[in-house]
Image (cartoon, rainbow, N blue to C red; front, side, top):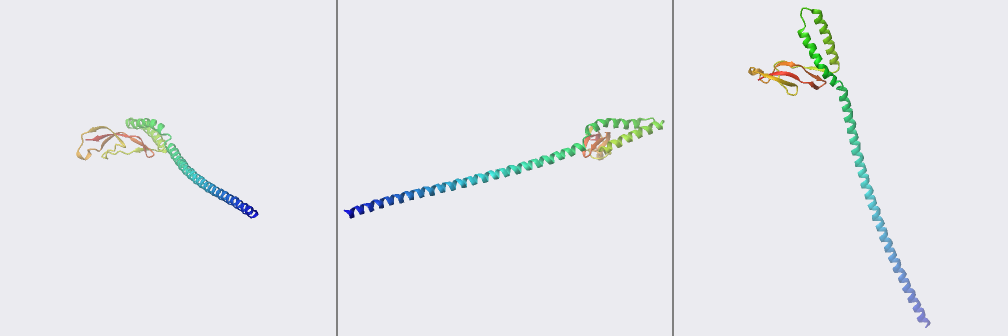
Length: 190
């Protein structure tokens, strides 16, 4: 029986060894499965962080572009404001300029000193306005009517070569820089 006992002990030991081996294989499979899950989780985390980084870069570029556009726009508005800062006051002074021109035309030709004084004051006033960027709009007779520059007050019958053209200027037009601040009031031929 000693042999049988030895064999039984050996078979029990083999069974225990096979159980331990099975447990180790199951443990290794679990460990390998956990390792793969951790690797997938890390890959997912890397993908998520990469997409967040791309979104952040995109937001940054958009914000930078938006700020650059804002900076350019405000610089342009500031420049425009400086160029046309006195537009309202110049528009208010245009009737005074018209009155000076009318006064020069209607002044007594007998009193030359009054005429000369009026001319000097008028010329000084015109020079000050021109220094501020005011320019007279030239509208000679016979030029084409342009609705972006002229305001037609009335139409008069005219021959074919003056049809649709300026016949007379009632009130001068003015530019401030390149901007029309007062349209020329004209009579056109029909």
